[in-house]
Length: 579
Image 1 (cartoon, rainbow, N blue to C red):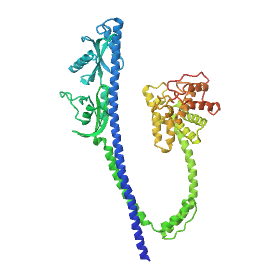
Image 2 (image 1 turned 180 degrees about the vertical axis):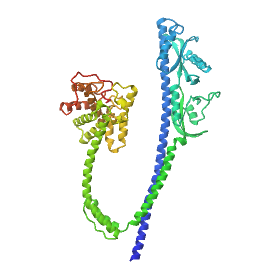
Image 3 (image 1 turned 180 degrees about the horizontal axis):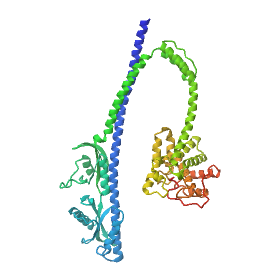
Image 4 (image 1 turned 135 degrees about the horizontal axis):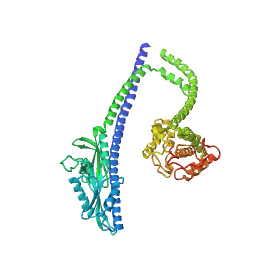
């Protein structure tokens, strides 16, 4: 009997060991292969998108840069034409010529120098006192092109003391359309150069090519002249200018490259990155996946052998007897015969079954306490954010109270009211990432400071995205500064694109901002605030939300904690929604 039982145990051990090993090995290997393939493609796609965005961003900047320079040159053309019509004098040879050109040059823009000449080439030049053969040559080409009636946008070239520059020109006509002269501008390439240098700091190479594939920037080495780019991507671009991203082999090795057309001028921006650098994260991912998969596989094999050694036939009986406990009949006792280990397991399970009910009740109590702690923690976090600015202390609590009242008035469910209240309570949590000097500044924010302040909804959403349970309250936090007519931030949503939760928080936020005293305004009378909010309906706020606010106030359910008896104070800039 003993020998028969021993043989039976050995067969069971082998069977269970083989089953557990196969059950862990096959899925792990399949999952590893799928994971590596999917993650590799995901990372490669992200890198391709990065290069595509980089090349397109530089191309768009160059296009906008030249459009702005052309507009500045057009102002000079219009001014000269107007001077000729009003005075009847030659605007290029008269004393007004330098004055007109100087006015255009002093205005903010891209021009480092400007020249206005008649069709004989006589006129005035304002700009740096620098002479070079290449600059004279480009001015001559620009003059000849504009003299013949065509605008000119020259290739960039380097000038000592100025760095990379380019020449643009446009013809000047009188009121009859007859050409009377030419205006030329010397465009400074400093902003564009900085973008090319920035790509270099990101371990990428940015190159500007013309429609034929010649390199325009960075400039070739001295004496080499204009060179043709060796990339096959550039050759394809010369045949058909379009935005393309792909891997290709070059004399320097395999690279990931992206090219984007500028439009006007007809150039292209090529951004390249060595494939080994671009896909370094892919290689790390593959290596780490293989290492951790090997570790997990080893652990799975060891665990399989361990459990197979411990299992035996009485386990089935134990499972049948304990099914009642698993179905919620806590306190049920099980009686299982078998080895001493199984008997111990039965006794331990009996004690565990008897304690499950008490444990379950304790868990329920702890869950209620955790919920209360969760809400208290949110309030503490909101209070901490409000405390950064003494003028907004209690702001988040008030906005949460107002938003809850509005949501109830609109007939939302209790769960939606709760989510709206939590979203309003945390709507300014992103200000934790904004400099205290900006938050506490008593005067109007500068454009740069306001741009930093405008990032707080996105920052708050990013903070809460790390907590899956907070996903339902993120819309109100992230989009409470959007406008119904569009033009808000961070995503420029409009109308029904803005979640209802965010529309409610936006109105509650504005109501509190207008009914509390701030450094730039006194608290306004509620009747005045309600009138102002109604005026902003369909433009900035949802009219249905505003009417719910009005009804709630009329029922006495929404009363500001601070009011001023003084006359209504004017609003400051974005004060009603930037709180």
